[in-house]
Length: 110
Length: 116
Image 1 (cartoon, helix red, strand yellow):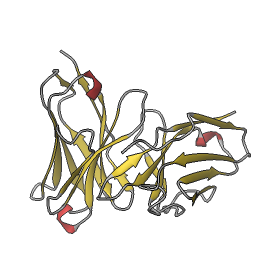
Image 2 (tube, helix red, strand yellow):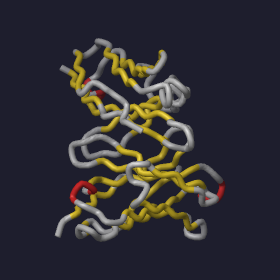
Image 3 (cartoon, each protein chain N blue to C red):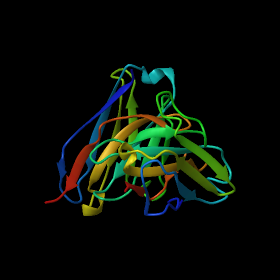
Image 4 (cartoon, each protein chain N blue to C red):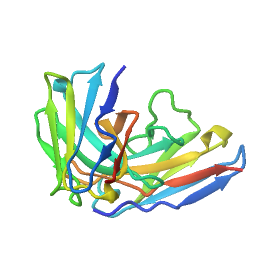
């Protein structure tokens, strides 16, 4: 199983919207609606932001949204805030109780 | 509130076995769900190492399968990771997490350095 493909970095100004893509294959992202997204600040553990493609855990801002088309999932953050600056990772179920993560995307808020 | 806490040596010699334990509080492992290990080399991304079901069934990343063993001790409400024949490439922060259709609760992570 190969890592999912994410852009290394994205950036946006406060108030703008950005989208991070996560491309997998028909064996993972394309086969299951089980993509999740994690936010990681430096020195901290990852935090679940989106699960099952588009659902938000309790307490996560509705500025975060997820979607999927074919083998590519996307995380959109609207109304960018300084606190959103972090690394973001996607993760997909890959069958047989296996999981695969993306390489991560560094979000810079300009 | 579910909490997970990793523990184990922070320094392991090359060719030896890395051993970590994840203590779970706020939820009984025997009640269900999978429990997993994820690692992150310094400056790099996350890598799923493997998961264990509360019954003891295990699932490993194919790239690490020959060196990994995950076990569970429901009496102590904890699960463990063993990674054999380590090299410098195994230096990473190791996280434990609860696994549903996503990883919802994570430990704080523990840095393990492989060096002589």
